Image (cartoon, rainbow, N blue to C red):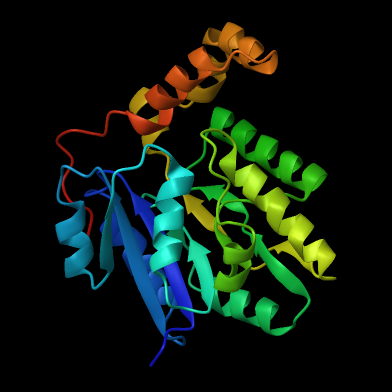
Amino acid sequence: MKPLFSVIIPAHNEEHYVRRCIASVKQAARRFPTEIIVVCNRCTDRTEEIAKQCGARVIPDSSRCIAAVRNAGIAAAVGQIIVTIDGDNRMTPGTLREIYRLMKSGRYIGGGAPIRFERYSVPLRLNDWMCRIGFALTGLYCGIFWAKKSTFDAIGGFADIRAMEDVETARRLKAYGKQRGKAYTCLQENWLINSTRKFDRDGDWLYFRLLAQHAGTLAGAVIGDRSALDRLLDEMFYEYPHEKGDSDAD
């Protein structure tokens, strides 16, 4: 049977997290034919082995851009509806059911999902509210992305840029939907469970500290000099050191 959903999971050395991510997708997919595609991006650990053990289809990818990694998964997908989730995150059990209901209504081009951290503290609560306010003001919901494969194909997939690609992709989906009289929306009953691993390692004030430390880099990017920003993005997202000594998450 051809799957209704293709869930794309980009993963760079996620051996400690990919099992629980896939388990959350399987729980959400109990009522729907679903393929799970893990895009192994430059993995040097057991991510591929674990993903295959969990029944996922694995695609290798060597890109240094998360948008390109997601697009590799979308290109390989055969499901009618694409859903994306990062390898260290999880979805709640009713996610695919709610997506199916919203897509079946014919009113929506696609959408995102609310983001909730897997634990909270004062700085993480501040991060949470910054995200909520940003989404509310712009309507460019991110987190879990979902839309028909034909829609992603029509907009050229995820925006192939190194920073804020999720926001730009949401903007393109919203604009494409407006052309067709459909809204870009957000799940109301389900959400993305966002990993706090970077905060667990480097402290809950991590992003606020980075903003303060790299204010000059950000200011330079605003006026057009992106060289320092690209190096910072590599450090934060593409060369981020993963935990050592952790046991495999069941």
